[in-house]
Length: 69
Image: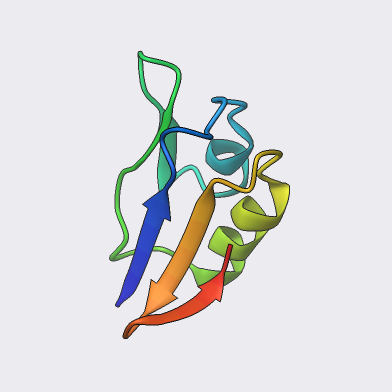
């Protein structure tokens, strides 16, 4: 299973992650992205979200290994 992390200090809430993977991310009322659901996450969508994050605030891990971010 993927472990998707958002650095809340650097996230600017652009919403790019929610655009690329709306089933995984949303921007909360405080303007910072949150992870909704990892179980149904498609890795290719998550990778697009990671690549599209202007502040590089998203990291993706699997079994303790950094896959991206």
